[in-house]
Every structure is written in structure tokens, then in C-alpha cells.
Length: 576
Image 1 (tube, rainbow, N blue to C red):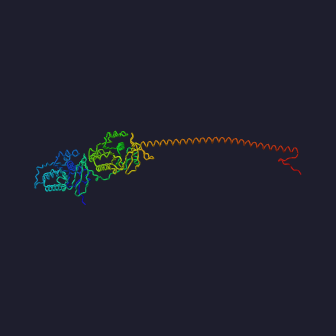
Image 2 (image 1 turned 90 degrees about the horizontal axis):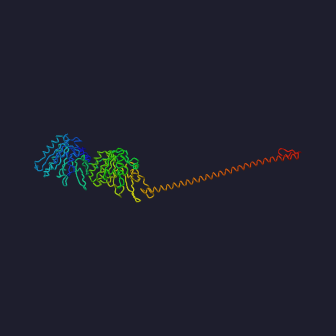
Image 3 (image 1 turned 90 degrees about the vertical axis):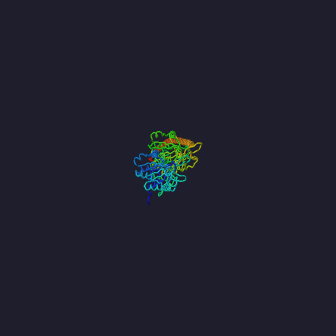
């Protein structure tokens, strides 16, 4: 099927909302009250078209002169004189005096058509802006004539094949003062500048768009130093690039809780906790670590001045002043009540685009609730988070929680948008309050589920394992007292063990001495017994020898007395 051809406006976010811009060759109506940005919308449509898309344009004003318009838009970076001299833009002022307008059946806009047609043909314009219709049609009271002339004007612009923007003032209960322009226009854009609880905000809504889909929500829009920007949540796609590179948190123990590597670069990190838990201290560590890697860090503070932040961080051993002097760290301090949410967002976008940081800190985001509802703050932070992700910037947000509020709940409700959520809280017991830290979630990486005791020391933040005692988790003085008791008991057990060892050693030495003495006694007794045995054997041998000698002596003596020979064996020889 044929697709409606569109003319991009170049206004940030608006072309995404309208899926391409305004209908090419047709007329769009921009209506709203005073100060809502109608004239600026039309002027930026022409300037962006001339500079970015090579389409010259004509701006015909009925209230402001060309000189006044040039001065007014110069603050936005638009140089109309240069564009006019280059033939890309034509600015014309048509003076219309109400008393000079005659309402007759023969009255028409031929003079306007001739003048406008000449300007279009002179520069080959593709875009036209008429600002405003009320000044041109202020003399008409007959609705039929007014409607006829409006249709004739719109038909003439379509015949000239130009994309036209016509501004109109908002009426009482109607989009325009006459209540007719919105019906004959192909596209109707409503701008609103409202005041809510003393905070001014601007809103934009595409009321009508013939032949095309478009965003139908009401979106905040900004007017900054570079023009208008509309950043609706629905126009932001989740298609940003990701990386596996990690960056250090500046706290070694905290890095260890994220599998030893810290955060993913370009991720969004949320630290929640009650007042005084140490959220800003973790932010300072992250900024200090980034600057130590020669990366740029941007610190948005909504409660303290930059000088106060630098002074306070020195108490925990972090000196941020050298990084500020080197241009690696920049602070931007402002009370949320100073501007509306859109102005804050526009300011932050502008500073980020200029400074090009790798790390951005917002401390704390809950202060934004003073200038907007929770839904508005959530929408604003969603746009900021997506913007930083799209640029690969690591975003660090701190959020203040009320005492006694549920753990898995934040004041702003952005926890679901975050990649990493760290929670800080106080643990009360034994007459003191101690800080604890735990990681509630970390997308895409393993992380510790333990609660660590969080200490602020002169050398920075320290995280130590919380002691799990018989009565539960112990921290602070209770942990120290329990550790001292355990240390004393360990010393006592060690002493008892050493005493047992010494007693056993003494018994062993005593036993060995007894064994040695008994061995000596046995050896002496054995030696004596052996000597006695030897002597006994010697006596037996001597006795045997004596007996033999005696026996021989007796045999010899008997033979001599009887004359009977004897045998050698001592037996008598028998004779017959």
C-alpha cells in the first residue's frame, strides 16, 4: 500500500513520535497558549530543513519583525542572517492592522498569496511557516467566510507543493481560538505550557494526523540551547550495543562480590539506602576509579555543592580535587526545584554531549520527586537511562529510601530498569547501628548473595564478612566482642593443647628414662649372671678334671698292690 510521504522536522524525538515528521506537501497546525513554543517549533522546522535536509523555507510573521525573530532565536544557536544570505531562508513580516480589514463578500487573501508566492519562488522554498493565523483573520466575524478563506489558504499552500506549518492560539475549550483550523488541517499538534505545584512544564500531543500512524500520548518536550527536543518513552528502542568489558567499582571487596570483575561497562547501577548509609561514598569511589583509568566522570549532585562533596570525601581517603583540576571529573550541582524535570533532562543531555563522559553519577534521584510525580520522574529517568545506554555510558544512581520501607521497593520505582541493584541498610543491636551491604540483583553476572558489613574508614570503604553467631548475624561491637571471645577461647584451647603436649612429652621422657634404667639394671644383672654361669662352668670343668685325675690315680694305685695288670679302661682282665 502507498505510504504517506513525510518531511522530517529535525526536532529530536518528534520525528520518532510521528514516524518520520510532518506530512510532505500538506499543512500542519501547531496550536497552544502563549509561551508554549509555537513560533520556535515553526522556526526550527525551517532551520533544520535548510541546514540538514537542503530544503529552503519561508517564514512569514504577522506579529514579530524579522529583526526581532533573528534576535530571539539567536540564543538557540540559529543564525537567520547567514541562512538568509545563503538563500536558504526568507523571513518576512506582514503588518496587519485590524481596523484596516473590511469584512465584505469580495475580500480575499490575494495580496498574501502574491507576497508569499514571490518569496517561495525566489528561493525555491519547500517549507513554509505562517505565524500566527489570529493576526491575519482577526477581523473576520462571519464563520462561513472564515472557514472558506482557511480552506482556500490551505488549498493554495498544497498547490504550491510546500510543507506548511501554521501556528494558532488556543481557544477557550477549543484547540484554536476560532475552533475551525483543526478541522481543515491534515496534522494538528497541541503544545501546552502548564504550571503544577509552582513548577512549569511543557507538553506536546499529536491530536490529529491524517493518513499516518502517530504517537497519541502526551509527551514532555524541552527548549534548550540547541532548540526543541521531544523524547517520549515510546520512541526509544531497546537496541543499544552491549559489551563484556568490566569496570572496577573502586572497592576491591565489592568487585569480588561481582565475580571479581565489577560492573559491566555501559550498565545502569542503582544504590539504595536510608540517609547516612554510604551511597555517596560508593559513588565517589566509582568516580575516583574511573578518573584513575584516565576516563571522564560526570557527577550530578542535587543535595551538596561540589566543594562540599570534595571535602567530605577526603574524610574517607578519597581526594577528588586533582581529577577536577585535570578535567577528568566535572560536577554539576543544582536543586531539583530550580527547574522542571524537562529542563533538568535537557541540561543533563547538553552537558553529557559536551563532556562525553564514560561514567555518570546522579546523586540522589529521589530529590526529583519534589518537582514531579512518581510517574513523571520515572519517565524522565527512563529516558536518561536509555540515552546513557545508547551511548555506552555507565550510569550510577543513588536513591534514598525511607526507614522501615520494604527492602525490594524504591521511592521512584526504577529498580526494574537497573542492571545492578545494591542495597545498603542499618542493622541495630547492642546499643549501636552498623551498616550492611548486599547485592539484590546483577543482570548477566554471578554475584554474592551474602550480607557484608560496610565500614567507612580513613582509607576508604571496607567490606568484611558479617559474623554469623549463635544468635544470628553480628556486626560492629557485637562482632568484635564475639571475635575477642573466640580469640581468647582459641588461645585457651591452644594453651591447653600445648600443656597436654608438654605433659605427654615429660611422661615420654620419664618412661624412656625408666626404660633406660631398667635396661642398665638388666644388663648389669645379665652380666653378673653370665659371669656366675661362666664361673660355674669353669668349676664343673675343673671338678671333672679332678675326678678323672683321681680315677687314674686310684687305678694305678690298685694295680701296684695286687700285681694285676689293668686295662686302660680300668676293667680287670679275667684269667682262666
